[in-house]
Amino acid sequence: MSDIQANTMDTSEGTVRPLVDNFKASMERIRTEIRKVIVGQDEVVEHLLITLLVGSHCLITGMPGTAKTLLVRTLANCLGLSYKRIQFTPDLMPTDVTGTDIIEEDSTTGHKTWTFVPGPIFANVLLADEINRTPPKTQSALLEAMQERSVTVRGKNHTLPPPFLVLATQNPIELEGTYPLPEAQLDRFLFNVILDYLNADDELAVVNRYTTRVDMPEVNVCTSAEEILKYQWLVRQVPVAESVNRYAVNLVRATRPREPAAPDIVKRYVNFGASVRATMFLTLAAKAHALLQGRYHVTEADIAAVARPVLRHRVLTNYHAESDKITVDDVLKGVLDSVRA
Image (tube, rainbow, N blue to C red; front, top):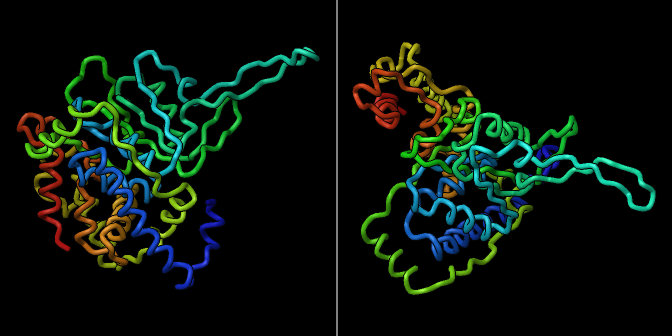
């Protein structure tokens, strides 16, 4: 769905109400299908659904063996979207991601022409596995795609199929042979989601489920690309009161150490705070969160619920924080405690 089509959609109640009802049913079916494969991690699943509904990208940080890849593949399958996976390695080249032009010769005429061979990035859902294991030159191949939804090869622009979202994973403990993502690329991700260990009951359920069978449970397709584009339009129609928008602005501004209203923990431990893009993402994510909760307006609670994953990768702490063992999440807790709705 193009921007022109989105702006000219019929907003009458007779059109929107069935779309809202369909949205509710689709989201519930998606959750049910994912639970066939993934045990626990309900909060992470909600964050991935919000990422999809906002039309953005998500960085998933988790230990090895926490089902990051399985979760992304299951989500793509039940959405009915095309899915590609790129294993990022130190020797990966930008053209391995975007695709390249090759010379083809017509066997009858001998005439040679350039033909574009699309790379794995031409999919609706792209899993960038261990994205921090490839050099910055290759990481930057994703920048244009994540922002512009297109790639440029030999001066020619190629549009990616909508909807398009990058779900990137990284390992938080293996620093050997890794390349930290540049701040410009981190800022393109809506969320930085922490995929933690399961609790004891869920871990037992995983062992019981997957040590007694060979094949994975089959998931059913719950929606389509066309429907998802309509849902993305619907999210943007959720109204936000000015007081709630003000709360989002105050939260983001409180992460900047030079702001007079910033709490002491920010002034002491933060080098750089979040940008205006963070404020826009915070409001958009809160709209999707409200709609997923069955509400048609955004509250301060929706803003607070998505604040940590939206801001976690946008706040840069200093050496004092490292010395005092203060994490970014500790800083964000201080911000949420100090900024009142």
